[in-house]
Every structure is written in C-alpha cells, then in structure tokens.
Amino acid sequence: MKVNSCIGGFVNNKSNAIKKTDTLGKIMADFPEVAPVLAGAGLHCIGCHVSTYESIEDGCLAHGMKPKDVTDLVKKANERVKEYDSMPKLTFSENAVVELNKRLGKPKKKFVRIVQNFGEFDFNATDSKEGDEIVLLAEHKEKKVSVLVSQRIERMLRGVIINFDSKQKVFTAQRA
Image (cartoon, rainbow, N blue to C red):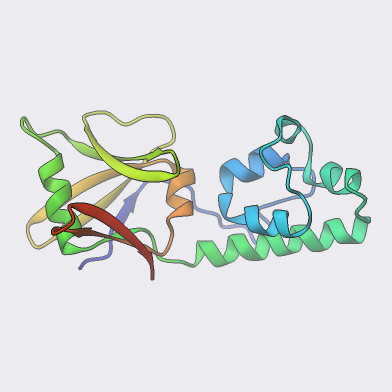
C-alpha cells in the first residue's frame, strides 16, 4: 500500500491555529477534531445557531467559565489541532484502490468523491471538483485513483485506512 499524496489542501503551520476570538462555527468548520475538546469543557452547543457568530471566548464566558479557563481550553484545542496535523493523511488499501477504480465507471470519470451520508461515507464518480475539495491520490501498482474530499472531511479522516471487503461488498475504515 502506498501512502497517498495530497494535491492542494489546508496546511496548518501555526502553533496557535485557534484564537479565543474565533467563532465556534469557524473552528468546527476548519478543525472538526476539536469537537470532543469543546464538548468536554461543557460547550455542548457546537451545532447551535449561535455558534456561527459567537466566539469561543463568548461561549465559554456565557457558560460561566473564567478567563483562565478560556485560555486553557484554547490551548487544549490547539494541542488537538497540532496532534491531527502530525497524523498521516487518509490512505487506501489495495482492495480499496481496485474497487474505487471500478467505481470510476464507463466512460471513466476523472475522480471519485468521498461523500458523507447520514454519518457514513461513500464514494461517487464525478468529473468535476467543487468548493474547497482537495485531491488525494490512492494508488497501488499501476492503478491510480484521484479521490476528492472536502478539507473538513479530510481532517476528520486523518490517520484512517480505507479497505474494501470484497466478500461483504463494503468499504471499511480503521484508524491506524
């Protein structure tokens, strides 16, 4: 199995990617991996309509936290971001590459897109890139498949290996 290359995409080169003035909505869009950190601090309103305009600091203070607690939470969130930044990109097993290649269809499409559907993921063939999508190259021997994934989903799937179970005809995912 070859580790995939990534064409384009979000790279965080800052040690403090999250600031206390950032809105909860922006944080969740850019760094979904911090959701458990925020929830662990009592911010269970991550999906709340207020999160689109309320900063992490405002949210914490509204929930009775002290300014030092806010600073500590932002530090923990940035530690989580740094941890994810060091994780390997999403990778694909030989069986997964073979199945993805089949899903490109006939006539052959350019890409396979990772789509999220009711909390699960699937793959659809397409010829065009959308929005903030990046391209991961899944390859095995002479087979190569360009996989489109949104930056947010790519971060959620860091360190995951996608396999295809040919007996059950399903993709499986396992964090390395």
